Image (cartoon, helix red, strand yellow):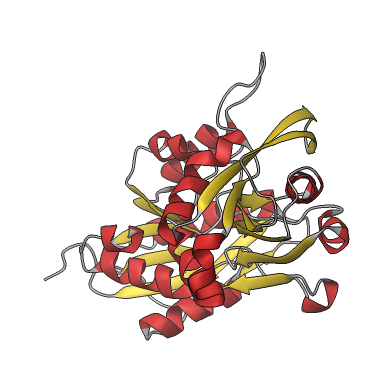
Length: 319
């Protein structure tokens, strides 16, 4: 007998309904009947068209752009479910916005990631399920359980099938020092060596590549990062490992494809052969770039949701 909810129900907002529908297909249930709209003045409103009393509720809503609208939708959905006597509410946030504001980088900076964590908890969420937080310490910002899935196994499986025995001759490249631990874990699983691009950031969303640490000469390389926003860092790193390091070809992958501003133009003009994203954020129109490919996270989130509902450990998903 599962005490926290008589049944499982999945709902979503407007952020990524396709991912929510795909997750429901893997679980074998219908997506919950609800509507998230706007009043005339732009305020978000939520209507739930089925009973949730006593149910184990999972709300799928990445806080991608428009970030504030999608975050507000999530908070209002949580509040609506709480007031409708849901048994337990899990906020499923495939991409967690505001994660880059995790500390005070200079005087009088906010720590917005902690504020968002407080808001989600105050709204009434009982737990959070997310993927590849930009800063791992954000998990500790919450006073409720937080499960952080890793996109690493999805990329490992994809590249192992794509390159096969060639993997051991390739190099994984971390685009900056801050991503080294993440890139090292990825490289070890594919039995690849690791290189690092040393860069100096001049201002937000702009960086200057300085050096390549490691021998990438004549090698096929995979740049590995957690997110791509304006793509400046990624494209500069790719340029450096080709022009400075002498790499033969450059592939790239990142969990979250934010793709703000000139990102797509930069990717199209870059030396990157292929850039793989997870579909935590809705996919762009394929016509905009032939270099960008999406891998689905739906099976992993579906299994995590089922395991949380059944009170089974999800540590198997981290292997």
